[in-house]
Length: 80
Length: 80
DNA sequence: CGATATTATACCCTTTAAGGTGTAATTAAC
DNA sequence: GTTAATTACACCTTAAAGGGTATAATATCG
Image 1 (cartoon, rainbow over the protein chains, first blue to last red):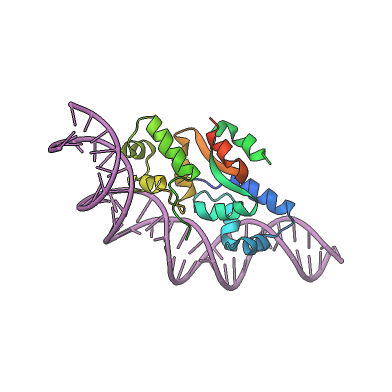
Image 2 (image 1 turned 60 degrees about the horizontal axis):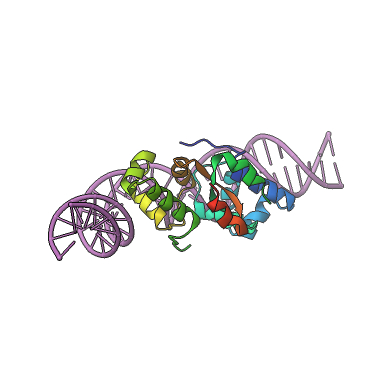
């Protein structure tokens, strides 16, 4: 089984954006229609989550998941 | 339920890369350790797939899924 | 054009992910 | 320092995803 990594690109992105917007995990779950347990597991770096649920969350921040060359991952992640 | 879209960024990416490499769906399933049925559903644009399975596939092409600004999706997708 | 290869669709079964809820641990506010 | 708020962890239930397999449809090759 893949390992959890709370510093992966998605977990870091969601955690940072949520804190920048001054939302709690409960706030963000309500705003996006997702379960609180899902959001918490995602921020803890759970690898095996549903793609559409992640995109539902990222859409709230004007983002979506796309294939990115692995060496460019960090740069793309910093992209505004 | 989200709709299937065989032209979404991931389906298009996987289909194009697979054809460029002259693999069949069976070839790619064997090479990546994924099920043939999963690969077929992914290329048909199934939205609710497992994130780690998608990354397992994209890793074969040196890519991974990262949050991308929605307006930049096309450009990022074309990035080598 | 016919045969073969490949892709798309469908079904069954087992395992698993997400929602909801509760509790414990940590952090923040006063 | 205490309390409240927030986050992390755990359990139960239900619905669904992926592996495997079979069949239908489409594309490719000679």
